[in-house]
Length: 250
Image (cartoon, rainbow, N blue to C red; front, side, top):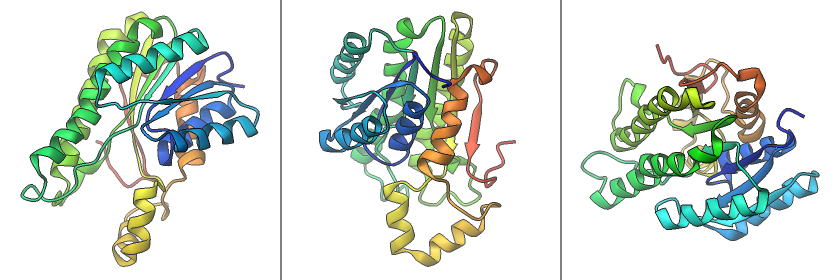
């Protein structure tokens, strides 16, 4: 298997894209630290991994808290003995027009997104040196022709892209590769939106050349596996849209 002997830490892995990534990594032999705020969801993800013959550990972690992330990493290192893969997926999303997004909502998006990514990358860096891989999650929202309702969200995601590029350039010589993916996938939030606003959802899907939304494990998780494997050993500092061809990153 592609990732045998490696340990991965995935934030926000109790559901949606994070869960899909955790399942895919485990299917290729990685030991997975499944982290998030709700223990019951983390245990569910770990149960699926273990039923498939994989190894996983649920760790409650709030990415808005530096001490919580420090404790999470310490647990990972103590339990698994090392760390080779970091996936920064968890983030609260500040959606709405600029007038509607509150300071509190934008701050939560900033703290759980770029600040958490910044902090956890730096915390994990000493343990990733030599053969490490960081995958951050962003969005193509900033490339929308009409960004109405997406300004605050896109701002936090674009900051993550900038941090990713900087880490790739500064730490590449240490054997740490850092990339960012911009996925469309059937997360709980997107599923809710598609079920409750079917006309908007249909119009959205119509703009995707492949005419479908990605699957969390099969489309997003499997690509992350490849990006973390030796097959992608020369891929570093890239923003990669996993969206069926919808975004043109230029």
